[in-house]
Image 1 (tube, rainbow, N blue to C red):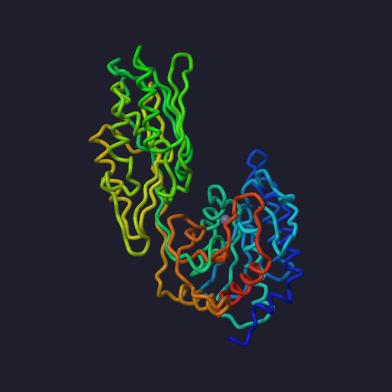
Image 2 (cartoon, helix red, strand yellow; image 1 turned 45 degrees about the vertical axis):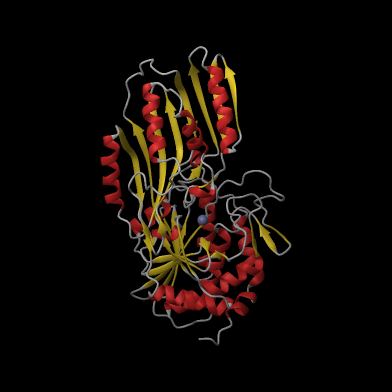
Length: 472
Ligand SMILES: [Zn+2]
């Protein structure tokens, strides 16, 4: 049906699109559990954003459903099969430093600025208008079209968990909550702690006793700061300081020392990066651990820091742990030591996020790890696993979305594989499809979040044609 000018259909509705989008962006839909009620489990703002979308749909003649006040859907058409479009209307807190009110949705220089403009209210409204256009053109369809609206994507995905307990899974679908062209493969994500089992108090053998050592707060970030507090035997302090200064110089990294109540405090700065590619940053914790291990440490600290050095320093691929893996679809397994912590009383731990390829078996990896850790007197704790997500390149879904993208943009629909997880993984057969076009700055979760109006309109045209082609 090349006779339909999708972008023109979008332009004909531009004014009402922007007005409806501004209305949605003006709702502060940040998770607020302190003020939760039975009919607003994630707070008043989040619920208001859900109601806003459902009411808009009802007004335009869609069948709406509120699923336990945490999710909802808008339906059009009928069929044994369904096409799902998965969106969310919750946003992360606005933070500081905005040029204009983050909930005003001001338009400047062709951009609309608001928390949620890109993630994910802008694309939600784009997908809604896409569905509305398909409906208003009275095109013949063989499948049901279903827009699913979540309200807890930014936190714990309790929206989709509840929704799919109550409602069926769409046959195929997409989530406009990441990047164009198409993300067809997402690595598995496993987070866990490796915990030292050595719990007896240290005998006072070492020259240096580590009282505390800590670096990083999140599994999925490369820590950019590390600190250790040391009790150094009389007379040895000057030498330790000298060695530390030499180390910083040699490694060319910023750091400092200070003496606090007789204890020696060492600090070191790394470079933060997302944990899905630790090589993009410098792990401050590992850098400091690599220095500490060379000192004459007390027994318990020595056990911990030797382990950290032997299995994590200079290895973000799990080679030393024997869990490295690589495939053609998603590349290498990556390993990020995001949280390093040691206390003289409790011992140490290393909090990890592992991003593993789609053909990698995490159950096997986990077995291997448990065995190895037991040998070294460590244990695996707080293990969580979100399976990889992958839709075959030659599937009808990928083929159709590629064709639509290429027709609408004139650009090649490059298939992307990523180490992160997108909302699409909550669909059995779904991919992330937009809204961020290649080359555009990713300002999701940042101050002055915006989306180009032109991009929103273009995305709407792409979604409209995609919905139609998938459901016809
Ligand atoms: Zn999102």
